[in-house]
Image (cartoon, rainbow, N blue to C red; front, side, top):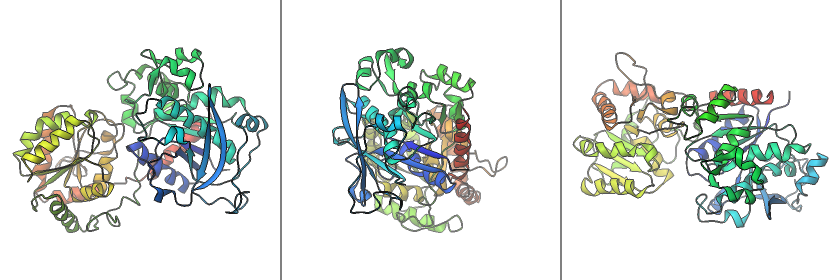
Length: 510
């Protein structure tokens, strides 16, 4: 039986570009799927902020035009992978291929390349040579171009995917384009689509007039209308063969009014149709490994936790905190309301009365940045506020921390708690979304196999209760077994990759 062929379309892919969990997932899930025999390719925009060191060996393989209503823009396709021996471009000195227009290729069903790259970049300086990946006034057009180019690319690289896996609002138009434009051509006629929601809160809403910029006529307004605008997210949910999200609990939550952000009715319908699924995220446990991570001061494992304490003391020295064995609490997060920072603000004074240290890493809303700067200034022996993002520092903080705070209002899956447990930092989380699916409440008498602490209601008293529960265990003989339990968890993509393969096969029968 031939392997499944999948194209994963994502606006960001670690380690090339990343602003959040989407980049992590798009960077690590394909590795796990390839290891299980899936022929999966990944495509992302070639944005100007990708470090040149990540693009060494970049090879041009195709150029073609993408039509968006009145505008035509050129897409250049690059890959980092060595082509297969039967590729006409296998000679490094050979000229790069230039693809013919997609409609000619689709009608004939012919392909003009047999490259076997795993990662592809779409270059267009007009759209992607920008100061930031998101937040541009023409984001609707930029990501419509990217999505159409990703689909059309398949014919130019000779990869006839079984499933195109679109992710978040940025590629939400993909299922619509595939169904209503490309399926009429033989090359694309049998392709299926999966649409994954990583965060339903960001829905890609734009005014009705943009329909004329993204290659859709005004007749689409009725189907993808959302509060008087159009929604790329709604298009993806409505027109895909199946919808998935990044944990089982979140898949249930988004069908409710409280978590559905206005999409709950549509999502309930998709669930009733048997087309809504939840698969929890994993992490790349090869690169995120405290035994080998080069970013750490000292490597360690669950049987050598004194080395974890050395990481803590060296980080304290580096951050200007007193060197002590006081419990170190940390947050590595986007500083946004979703992350539970309002209730953190309410407990800060009480936290400062305790014998603890708090380390913050992240950027975001000024009110939260200023909150932590304020406490770092007034209580420098207890708070280190690092208002930036530094991937090496994040690894050091995970390795040094005793407790990791993640009191989110909602959390589709969350990766921070997984990284924290991998590095022996005990998570304190609110019982929502993927946090509820991955953290088990520890109780030395009733649940000694727990790996963290959970509280249910989004209230400051709930967060403080959970913190005090953890601190009560910290200086007891139960703490080390708790840390070992957390570090012993299977956080890899192995099980989730199997679930994705099962879902892909199910979609093939739809």
